[in-house]
Amino acid sequence: MAITIFALVLLLYVVVGAFISRYVKNSDDFYTMGGRGSTILIVGTLAATYLSAATLLGIAGQSYKEGPLVIATLGSFGAWLGTLVAVVYMGRKMKALGCKTMPDFFDKRFNSKWVSIIAIIIMIVGLVGYGVIQFIGAGLVLSEITGINFQLLIVLFTIALIAFTAFGGMYGVVVTDTLMFFTMLTISIVIAPIIIGQAGFEQMKGLSETMPNYWTIGGTENRSIGWSISQFLVWIMFFACMPALVSRVFPAKNDFVILKAAIIGVFFAPFMQLTVFIAAGGMQVLQPGITPTDNAMIVGFMEFTPPAVAGVGLAALMASIMSTASTLFVLVGFALSRDLYERLFEKELNEKQSLTAARIGQIIVAVVICAIALARPSAIYWISIYAGSIFAVGWLPTIVASFEWKKMNSKAAMISMLSGVASFLLFGELIRAGVMTLPTGVDELMLALLVSVLSLIGAGLVTKPNAHELNYYTEMKRSSMASITIKEFLKQPNGLQKIKKQYKQLITVSVLFTFISVVVWGYFFIKLGL
Amino acid sequence: MNVEILILFINATLVTVISSVVVIAILRKQYLPIIKEMEKEENQEEYTESEEKRINSNL
Image (cartoon, rainbow over all chains, first blue to last red; front, side, top):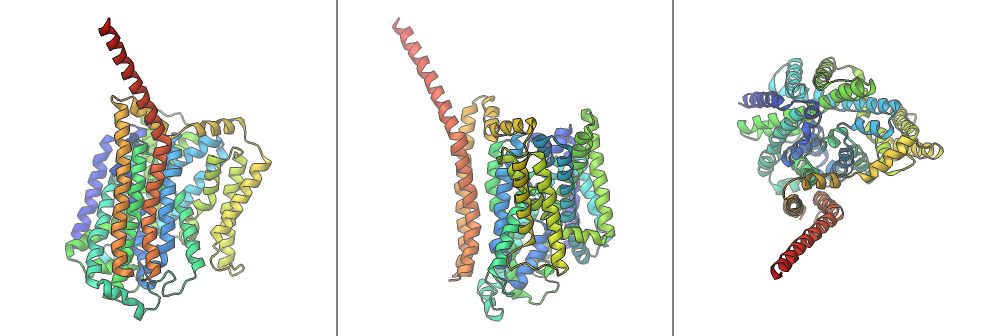
């Protein structure tokens, strides 16, 4: 029963993905769905991209073992705030500048081949390292549960992903992401309450007696507050410029959609995570001693929920893998076809050729990633140690300085990106080799970020921006999503009335979701904290 | 009362509050002045039209 539901949901994604391809008429549709993303689609793709398999497996396992507060209180809080920064600050600014991909921004801002090449390499290495390792890890877990051979499972996933990335592009990814978001939401609104209900809040609170510090920020391992703060800083910086999140803004219809998605998406980030982490605490009551702990939630929905619900749970786990993988496929494919082939190699392509190049890019990426996942070379595990954080040390200082500092130029960007990544790898390797030790609460990412920022400021002060960089900075300061949206609305009949209606809707959404979050988290606090 | 659990749920609520405050600040700073200006222009046009009608009817 569970396997049947799992297979049917996979088939549904493929059918929807293939169906969506009929709406992709040109490269603009392929890269940004023609700017037609509605609030529900942008919220869906943002939330689905945010919730990766790591939440349902690794972090849920850590919550089960050490206590639900260990990662959630500060680490996840950083990720939620980082998501807000990615949407409202990074994404909005880049969309206002007409960027269709994040490397577009580097290209427009500096008009320098070397800056673009370094930025694209950082993105490809970061996304592949971060995504493939989840693809492999979660694939192994799913293979174990379903009994489907791992290699066959990866090939099936790749074929399914090609169906909506190569044919549907961003359109296919956004629509299937939204379907996946609703599948994943069932874990929070159906499976987690079933597990918590069976465990009982009183029994969960009682875990502190048998497992000292289970309901503390330090957890059963007595982690220091410095460690928790370093988690907060690492996650907020990583999520703030994560291309997977920032690029969710580009397909949005207008600024009102982006702002609504910011409120609703940022509400669902803690909602989807905390319910899972609290349910993982419930699993410690229902079945202590699960090994590996990563399987805590899977044991939860396979053993403690009805078969139909367990099937949806498996489908949700698959959705969390596929939404991460589809974003990885689509963004790396875009980097190949648009950022490298069309822009850097200056290929003059007509609309049809551009769309064909984009689709070929997707298929190449899918085949390469499938091969990496099947071969599992040891190098991919090494890359994955650094991959996620590479955006924080490589991109974050350069992007922020590009937005805010008039003296920012291509030399400073190159030096900052290279020194940030190189020092991050160097510190990491020295620590792993035991040559270097850091005080508790200091992470190598913070040191590398400091190197990146200082080298950026130093290089920016001793070099000068060229005419293009100065002109673009002025142009950038003049452009905003608000003015673009107002102009678009005023072209329509009754434009002012429509703007006022959207304004009131946004105020209502703000108040409504603040109220919902007070009620939801207030309820959990009364049940667990008093 | 477990203060650390309180911190967790305050953070979870705070993130929605922060996003709402940021969005409302953007609306008030970037949209409200333009809406008010447009309304003023619209009212001015309506006033001018009604004045013209009144003068015409008097004539």
